[in-house]
Amino acid sequence: MRTILSVSSGLGLRKVGLTGGEPLVDVPKLTQIGQFCLEELHVPIHMHTNGTLVDEHMCSSGGVLTLFESVSVTFLGGDAGTHEYMTKTSGSFARAFRGTGIIAEAGLPLTCYYIPTHGTCESFRELTPKLHDIGVKRIRAMALAPSGRARPIYGETAPTQEEMRQFEIDLLEARDRLGVYVEAGYCTRLSMPNLAILAGHDVCMSGRNRVHINSKGDVFPCTAASGVKELRLGNVKEDPAALRKIWVESDIINMIRAIHNGGLAACDECNRMPNCRDGCTVNACGTMSDVERAMCPLTNPQLRGQLR
Ligand code: SF4
Ligand code: SF4
View 1: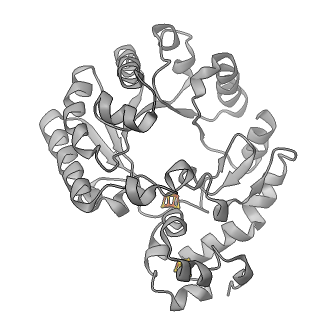
View 2: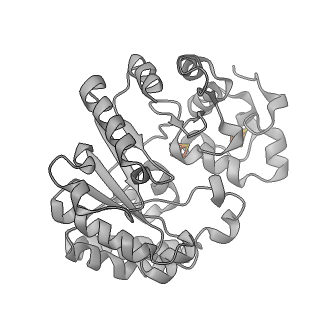
């Protein structure tokens, strides 16, 4: 990990994000990573947690969570029934809610992430005031991405348009009524049009300023792309220095850059344009028909090498 971070530093690393699994299962290691980033690389860190392991000690002076520029707790539903339907872990909602309260009470920079799915959207309506009551000031909406474990079941798991529309309206209404700050990234605003009024970066950042490295050392162009086999850029487990070559020379990342810049010839004739150019390659890979997959260089390796 240290070597990968040091190589990244040489590439201009500006921020580190840690996600799971669950980062708080190994607090000593997390502390070491946090201190290394802050004290030796001088870059801020943020962390995504499920919130279930948070305790007061972690949030008090010198505690591991005080190392982070920001901490996010993810809710997959707005109550125990919906959240635990997704986590498959009994009691996880109550523990996440308790952990969130501890972080908020300590005054640490906290954002609660909402990932709505089919059947869970409405439940968030009641969660927002409860979070507000325990001191949560920021909520971020996240659209489910067709990647990782969600990809094979994306068709059944993604919310319907009407569910999504109501979720967006509920969130904006809570923002106005309670004064919570609501945000959504570019990828999310693409699929939640009512949230398009929210501030955020206005382009896909894949290929521009980020990579995601999973626990096996596989490198992907963004966190949502993790586990999308078509978007695997390479591996740095045995050779962390390979990250530089991957960032500069990977066929996939250069193809993504070309898609965004209009430099991939195959896109000219494709009916998914301009959605891919202005949109999300993770979504494209996860939702193409078989015919589209056969015609796209991202999903058909035999068509690679078509950059202008
Ligand atoms: S599906 Fe492939 S070929 Fe079509 S627009 Fe998207 S990236 Fe280009
Ligand atoms: S590929 Fe999609 S999920 Fe990844 S940064 Fe771009 S828009 Fe966001």
